[in-house]
Image 1 (cartoon, rainbow, N blue to C red):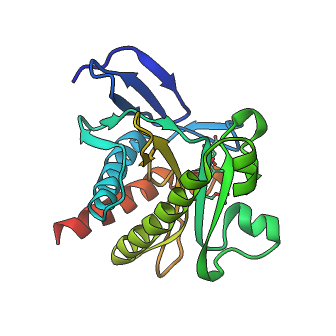
Image 2: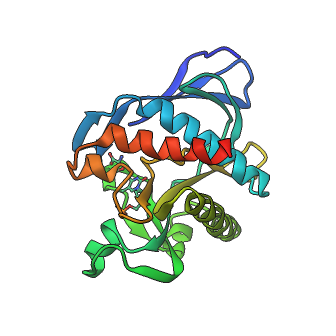
Length: 239
Ligand code: TMP
Ligand code: ASP
């Protein structure tokens, strides 16, 4: 499958057209940004890790019966995916308090919730991805009521799969962000990536951060943290 013209360049990935109108190629970069692009940097090797980790997790999710855009890994940084139009919602699931949740509600990080939470942000960089609820999403015609129900159901199911998988790797899945897309026929599928850029992953015992918070918060050891979680994922599968 050949890369044709570039359709889009985001903060962490590029998307290319192919000779099949229903398939795109995603190319993962080492570029990292935070705070809506205000902080910029590079995390050496991140593109390779995020590509391989995303594909690994997408395969697991697909096997569990949730449709995804994943088709085939093409190289270290490139993956063939189904063409989707992205639903402009960032879907965030949380199992423990952290990040903007802890800040917004004035609580410490690390409180374990009795049940996971879900929230949506409007995917709009100019507005800084504002938080919204499903009524707002409907009013803005970002998705239909049926699509929102499907997205919620899939997001909680993905949480069950990922939480159990990471627990087997000695990692606590604190929270994460998902994006969904519509195939040409309107089917909702899981899209985008699932990586240390989009998840908070803590060592189960020490609570050491093994994700992009090391970059966001200038904690150092960024590359090492990405390599460590990838290593744990690979070690799990070698068993
Ligand atoms: P938050 O606590 O900053 O709202 O982040 C919640 C989760 O979403 C966290 O795992 C990081 C992820 N996330 C993204 O993937 N992209 C983003 O732009 C933001 C703000 C968060
Ligand atoms: N990548 C996002 C940005 O630049 C934010 C983040 O992941 O913290 O806005």
